[in-house]
Length: 545
Image (cartoon, rainbow, N blue to C red; front, side):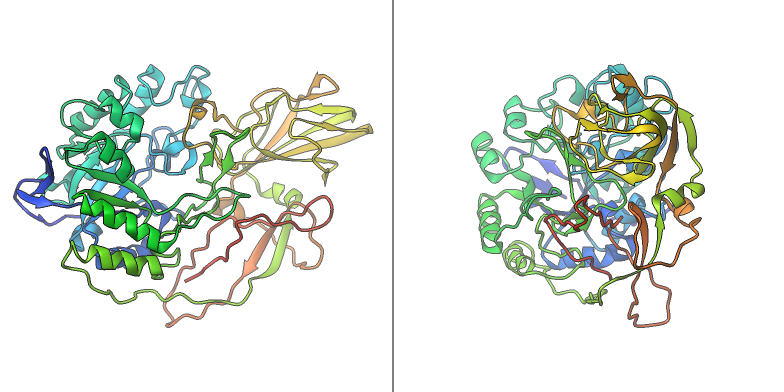
């Protein structure tokens, strides 16, 4: 256990009618968001030092429940793939003299798969396997799952201000103050689990209008205009000042002029308001944990790998014009702004070369989880699932809206052009192998469709009005245990499709010490049926350090 030295013995964060106080003195929260699970642990200190040098005094982060409980009752706070040591992150903040606001969920949004809510399906009536499930409510099936997540608070409670740690406030759920039954339940769950610090919310105009949760819950808004309209004579905090917006696959990259951003921050601080900048650092959605946007779209559109937000600190940790201008503003409110030395220096490398590949079909011999059945959803998988069955004749393949992810269809393991997302013509005779490769592209992280994010093949698909049966189902989990079993075939000229590739990158390292290269992944190159390679914006470079 990491012991946190007592930062102070005075009164913690309080909110009176007009302002916050900390240690009985007026206090402005000059906060930013950096998510520990989106930044490799090796870079934490570098990013937090640069954050402190910008004039920030408070660090905020969400806690993704589904990352810490990947399987029911199996809790993970250490991982080779993700930076999940929350205690170490909070302890580092304390060592650097930063205050901490914990946004503990259980729902976080955050453009993260299902808003951070667990979705596993190992027992009947468990979350998304329950057809009547109502997430973010007092529905018994959901509250039982929340109650079972009793590992988090005991791990963070020792880091509270009252215990000598940096945590000065804890957020109750996320953007949901209008729910008069569910929010009090979450509040009481936090209190009964050992949370003693100030509780607050982050809400839009609708949530602020409803007044939030009574008794000890401090309302915060998401824009300076919301607060000015809803709380003109009260203390103000912008819990999420968005540096711009997230990016969706196939859309243009969002940017916001540095001068315009700084003008809004300046005006907010002139109102004597506290602020939390979301996001301060351009980060990475590692693995398959990205969320998807499902508002006013026929199907959820997945988030891209880069969690960019056009933030002041680049994804590689470099300073930007936004950083410099923001530092100039915050220095008027925080006397400890100073330029920190660079711990990591970014480098530009030569193009990455493809050296080895393995076809999808050849990789199946290395899978461990293959079994027979009619269909099974992907609630236990974040990666790829391959369904194969035998057909003897062909006409019209109809998904009946039961394919809830991106699907590549092949016959006799040859890809076919996709005519429609719901049906496809198969003018075939004779026995053929029909294959459907389903790719998890992310579950919606917000909106009214949250309860409907069951993925994979969730029901019958039909060929000529006859349900297909007797599938062989292969789970391609893309984890080291699977990938490390590959026997790779050297061939860089002919790529059977679909295909898995190994890329080689030579690094220039300053010493002989062992280094780890973190790349956003997985990287994929998909060949369009017209035999032309296609690419969709936003297009970005992969940056190694």
